[in-house]
Length: 147
Image (cartoon, rainbow, N blue to C red; front, side):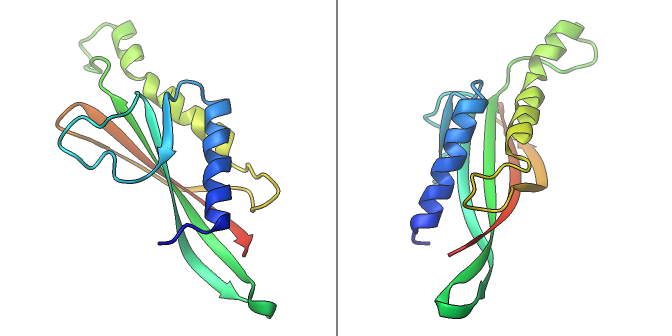
């Protein structure tokens, strides 16, 4: 998919928002399959990758379109300890800090807009672990804008 002006503006706005409001993220970039490798991805951890999908486009007068877009975030963490119930509580809390970062991301993106698109709304969040100790959260926000 060709990146148009709105895509660029939206990606830059979201990346800047995350960079400014979630300092725990050490790497923020556009999604290009960086996590889809058997080798450890070249990124600072934790990291976030941003992508956009146009899920609906409605044409209006003058060729303008109302676009419904989904912002797909892939947030990745390296394993930092055990969460086993037999482990000391402080060890488990440290290992679960990733959920604090996920919550922080949600707090700064939910209902946020920069005046060029409708407020972001989270519509889905899933997670998956990998054999190499990387945990990936997939979080999807929806917005609308005119193009």
